[in-house]
Image 1 (cartoon, rainbow, N blue to C red):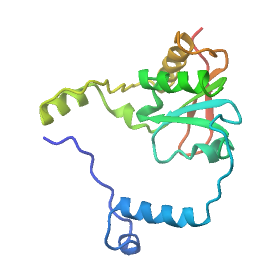
Image 2: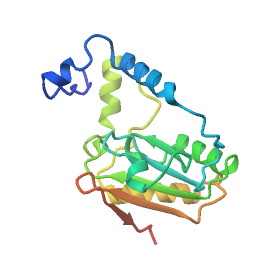
Image 3: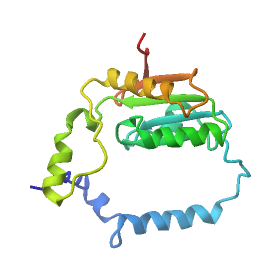
Amino acid sequence: MSIAAPQPQPQNSADRDAHPGGTVTDRLVEANRQYAHTFTDPGMDARPVQRVAVVACMDARLDLHQALGLELGDCHTIRNAGGVVTDDVIRSLTISQRALGTRSVVLIHHTGCGLLNLTEDFRHDLEDEVGQRPSWAVEAFKDLDGDVRQSMQRVRTSPFLLHTDDVRGFVFDVKTGLLREIEPRS
């Protein structure tokens, strides 16, 4: 049994024919060539202007810069499945704070997240399919608000992070584009 997700189908023949031949990666590389043709070095430093790190889900529907009114260079953006605070997110936040000066952390989960429908059985099915158990946890959740709270708690209690006073969590509504703030555990 394969646990691979079904691939989205082109919406119409124009979508299918827009890029005949080549792979998606070929099209991305070509888009980069076009971008580089007019690119000029903005002269920015690696340190975010707003001194904020945003941790969010990798979901393709979230345009974080647009949704938060951010410009290039304003923030560090750390994305993964679910926007869950994992050890690797703590690693990135630690570097962001200690080496590059961020002071605030914004956590963003969203409605309709794929992790709401998964369980740790995903790992077991994957092990059955490929013959090796993944070393990582799925970090699936049933309670969206509860998982935001858990992520806030993981940031606030990490011994590696210097700045844990300004850690706020939100749920982005994919239908309205609005953020709903989640209060931390008392």
